[in-house]
Image (cartoon, rainbow, N blue to C red; front, side, top):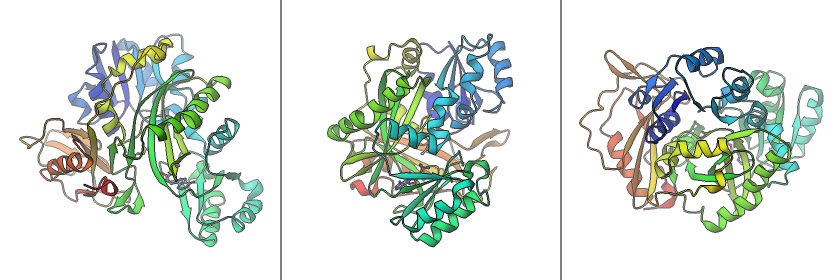
Amino acid sequence: MNILVLGSGGREHALAWKIIQSKHCSKLFIAPGNAGTAQCGLNVDIGVNNFEEQKKFCLENNIDMLVVGPEEPLVKGVYDFFQQDDELKHIKVIGPSANGAQLEGSKAFSKKFMLRCNIPTASYAEFDETNFEEGKKYIAQHSLPVVLKADGLAAGKGVEICDTREEALKAFEEMIMHKQFGEASAKVVIEQFLDGIEASVFVLTDGKDYKIIGHAKDYKRIGEGDTGPNTGGMGCVSPVPFVDNAFMKKVEERIIGPTIKGLNNEKIIYKGFIFFGLISVDGEPYTIEYNCRMGDPETEVVMPRLKNDLVDLFLAVQNGSLQNIQIEFDERTYATVVAVSGGYPGDYRKNLKINKFENLKINAGTIIFQAGTKQTADGIVTNGGRVLAVTSCGDNIAEAVNRSKSVLEQIHFDGMYFRKDIGFEFGE
Ligand code: AMP
Ligand code: GLY
């Protein structure tokens, strides 16, 4: 099969790395890709939201399968675009319909869906310009901290956790009245703060059946000890010590099962990944959010741990035969550590030369996934905030993390930064 992956991050490098190991993959293309994906297949200079160019490319190159990495093309309807086109509808698209992608594309949609399906989540209310005054009253009587979320996609920036009501009122006004995140914050979800420890669970579904393909804990803050602003993710570990069989059983019974049943009952077309963002409050799982795609950097630990042929799983999603598949995991511990460009998640520089990729001392089982990188005549340069994600395995979290750090210590670009404490709360 000829396969096209959409995206250009570490997630897409990890997907491409896994897909080329499949017996089904003849040719792999990545649009637009990065310097790392270029080692797995052919990068194609087409944007993730440029459906017309994707169509042309798919027809010219006999593409059989489209694997969608990021959320934006899904929310914009890439699945539906392919399905509704007579020339494209034979192509197997891995990702939900635009309707299914609303699980991520609209916080209000996903909260209502969770309520209908009786899925544990923080209590909430939604507001827009028409009931703005009511929203202010809602904040005035709300417990603290209080969580405000822009309804739509806001490049990971639409959530504010406010410790005071003044802060919350200001954020509420900024979002709704001053359109802080444009149309994405025309509507705002205000919800109860849940105090606990987070983990993400990843599922592949055809909208009727599902398989859990992995889980991970992401470290979102830029600073060590989980301090400073939120980022896309600075590192991950998998498996996560508190995600044991008893916790996972609750997650399946209370969250994953009801979600898939809800999709089926509501006839929402969904053939792709679901990322369950969970929080454990005293051992009880709640859903913080859904994403309609894999996580980044979670994919960089989930794919190496997954033993199955990924394209086999994609075909089972398309054929409705997921229930016949047994998922197998590498039982070792995996960790990934992300190196970013100085200043990230604020302003940062690009086109910084990465000075060393050859002759590195690397443990067996360590993989350098590339994110914001670009190949130039002069070598590989940075091309984004998150630049590399180095994944390693080990007998425990500390060993895996140390192996990744020892590789990053041999690589250099101006302003390079990575957290040294990924997995810190799980000890040595
Ligand atoms: P989201 O964009 O929904 O992933 O939210 C970003 C981050 O905000 C999450 O990963 C959590 O750390 C935090 N968060 C979101 N909602 C809540 C909540 N109700 N209670 C506590 N933390 C939250
Ligand atoms: N690492 C979090 C995400 O991919 O949304």
